[in-house]
Image (cartoon, rainbow, N blue to C red; front, side, top):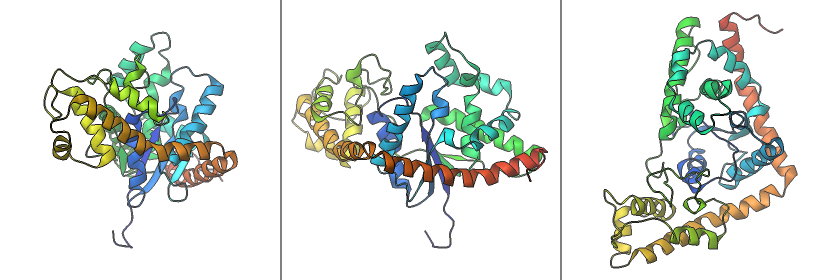
Length: 335
């Protein structure tokens, strides 16, 4: 990129809902580190989004600190990126209300994640659960982000963000950038080891289906050995081989080998050899992450310095944009 060419702004966030899974890592956080040289990156711990589901306050605080330590351990550089905690930056909530008044009820009613989460938590279908896509739009538009790394399940929310931004611009004058999605070319969706037709999730009742980035080596290998495959014995990527396809995707991501190379490597070998190899490769790949996490989480002063720097930088950037939005909407400027 030429020195005088302005970098595009990229923003992403992750909820502090417990230890990150291999799916979180491969689909999102691993790519965050790679993006830092080519983009102006903002990465947030989305603790405000987390409370759409009931949380234990002490646990939420702990999870937030651990999530921040984890993204740094995975390669997010607080010196090179703006890494912050969402609730520490008040502009998100301020812009949320303004955008809510440019969002249609029907648009929110069509959000499939609201329907899914309502079904999972029928005793707590709160207003925040219904309107949190507006807060997500505020997260993005407060920084005029050009790109947002999104999984398949977040495309609908990004489209809503574009619609709301466009409606605001038409109503009050041009201000917000219409963000585009950034989807990694591969490994964007890691499936459960226990049920490879479903996405890997920490809420999976069968915890053998989920690899956590802080799991020890023995645990990782044991889970991969129990991974669901099929009745064949040939390691190849093909339709109807969901389990093997998932394992090949994981192996490809952590080793850099393509599917043809993997098929040749395990030609004549059975699934047992392949599962063990995947487990060992994943364990070796995650070891530096676990070592970094253990070091960072034990250094509270360093951790606080990092997120305070990020919070201040995020507020400085977003305050300018939100102030312009408030002015355009007709609010009296603060003196």
